[in-house]
Image (cartoon, rainbow, N blue to C red):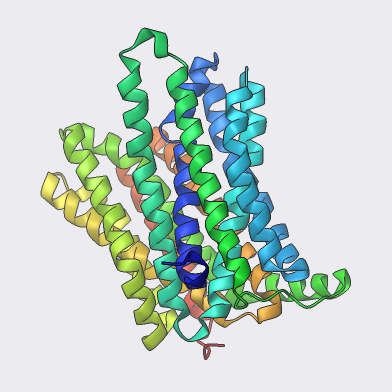
Length: 399
C-alpha cells in the first residue's frame, strides 16, 4: 500500500498512536525510576511528574489560537518535532533540574498535538466527527495502554543485570525517540494530500476578539468543564482505587485486571458512542453519561468484592467514553472553522486542569475524611458541573 494514498484520517490516527505511545513511555513507569536514579527525593519526583501536566494547562489555548492564525498543519508539525526530538534529550540529563526542563519541553508536544488534531478531524469529517474523533481517541488510548507494558518489560528485563543499570533507562528513551519519529514521518505523508487546508490570514486583533467570544460562550466553557469533571473523577479513580482495593483484600493481579478492563472498555466503545452522538445528539449523551458517571464514582465504596468492583469499573469506563466522545464533537459543532483550534485549545486546557487536580484534591479529602467521603465528593463535583451544563447549554445543529 502506498502511504501517500492513505487517507488523512488513517495517517492522523496512526501518528496519534505513535505520538501518545512515545509520550507515555517517557513517563510510565520510567519517570519516577529514572528520577530516583538521578538522585531525586520523593518531593522531587512529584515535581518532575507534574511539570508536563502544567505545560498542558498553559500551552493548549495559545497553541489553538496559533493554529487558527498560522494553520493547523504548521502547529501539528511543530508538536511532532517535539515528540521526535525530546526523547533524545533525556539521554543527556545529569540531574533532576535538567530532567524537569526536558519534561517541560516534552509537555508541549501532547498539549499542542491532541486538540489541534481533533480540530483537523472535525473539519475534514464534519458529518461524522463524533465517530472519527472516537477512533482518534481510541488510537491514542492504545498507545497509552501499550507503552507502560513495553517500557516496564524493558526495565524489568535488564534490572537483573547489574552492569545494565542506567542503560535500561536509556534504551527506553531511545525507543521513545524512535516512536516519536515514526509519528512525525506518518504525518509528513499528509503533505501530498490537499484535504488539510491552511487557515486564512487574520490579524491578531481579530483573533483576540474571536477568542473572547469563545471564552465567554457557555457552550464552550461549560462543556469543557463537564469533561474536566469526568476526568477529575477518572484521575481520582485510577490513583486511589488500587489503594482502596488493597484495603478490601484484593491482590495486585485483580487490581490490574480491574483497571485494564476500564481502559479497554473506553477504547472499544469510544467510536461507537461517537457515532451514536452523530445520530442522536450530543447534549443528552453528555448529560446521561455524566450523571451515571457521578453515581459510579460516588458509590465505589459500597462495593467490596472483585466482581462488583470490576463491574463498576467497566460501567464507569463506559460513562467516560459516553461523555468524552461527545464533548469534543459538541464543541466543534459550536465553533466556526476559523476558531476551532482555539475552541479545542480551551477544552484541552480545562480538561487538563480537571485531570491534574483530581488526584490532588481527592488525596487531601481521603487523608482527612476517608475513601467514602472522597469518592462521594468527586461524584458531587461532577454532578454540580452537570447541573450548570444542563441549565445553561442548548443543543444546536451540527456545523
